[in-house]
Image 1: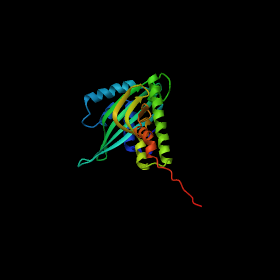
Image 2: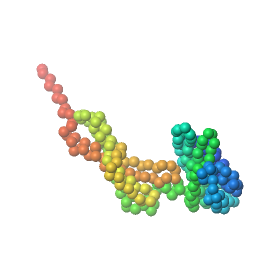
Image 3: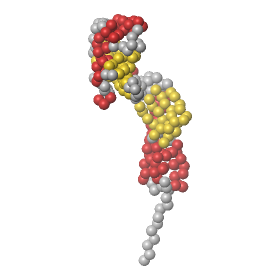
Length: 244
């Protein structure tokens, strides 16, 4: 099962990563070591593989999901590709995350880096958007984000339907918000970026199925200025005089 759009799935690298995991679960750590690049094929890597096998031995995969996928092309005389892949494997009550950096050069694949994380529940559940165990800060951030978004949208609609001077410039200005106030919905950690630009005042984003929701908003400066000068920029109505 994959959560990544098909155009971002690189079958050759995916199959290579799954071959590594399947071989590891069968205890073929020496073969897994042979899949590493020369720079990382070391005694430390062998110890890492042996330790990882002891943790996962005798466990059956209930489910696997491709959770992240990125391809980078390194140009030059020695042109090669870097695949950065992330997988979620469920082993009964243990969720294991594998993150790979796989290099491809001259049609040959090798693992340049692999990292693992363990969890007793799926991180997609950890980072789900729920109201449980949330602080006042969470709801304040959420309310402000919704208010800023609605305020920007309403102002934009008014600017479109109202006869004003320099309409298109005002529409662009209204779309822009300054500064960025971000909160991690899972942890409650927040960040304030005074120098930043946002569109439409707020955003609700999540990068991947195991990533936390990030709620952010900016100050809709364009919309605020619009309401301050609205009367001055409104075109006067033309009154038709009929003579009889």
